[in-house]
Length: 207
Image 1 (tube, rainbow, N blue to C red):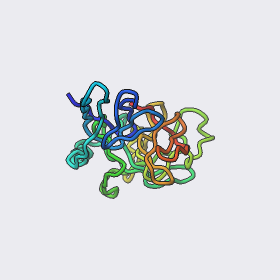
Image 2: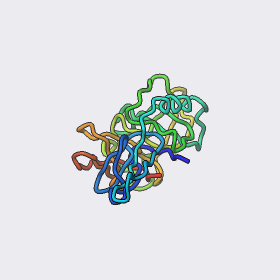
Image 3: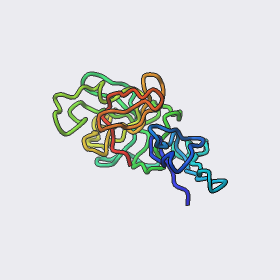
Image 4: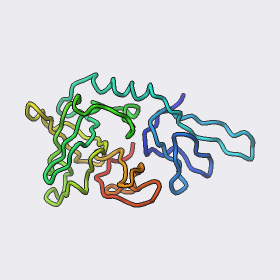
């Protein structure tokens, strides 16, 4: 049975496998670059390695987008959001998926209309559960980041209130200032897979 991977997920190492389409290598580890089913191609001979790849499949993106409208957000539910604006005391986001599974994380290259999604606000005091007064929003999130959060209030008629307090919540997919994919290097930093440069983020614990 094939498994579904999300961007940034570790699939194997270069010691045992080759990196195929839809994957990339960073520090000898093979990571998923896109969402999709992992395909393991057996080695052609005893002296060669098996190849890990993720075929590109447009239908996977359409399936994810249909999940986004399948249920309504409610207090306590987990959501995937895209950050649309970052201000000093809060960040705005569009809710893409309610109660996401591993297979329903949208790739950072997927196109969705934020105006058609539920809108959410992430206040500075709801970013983390410690040193709340020292949170700097621009060091936690950037516009375009995909974050895992949970609903803490139905808010007003325009926005839900969300929180990323907890190890499992925060940024799950991001691009660097140079435009390359990034992978988690710690709970507060993600690293560009091409340049190796680190950028501050409130990082969600990888699943």
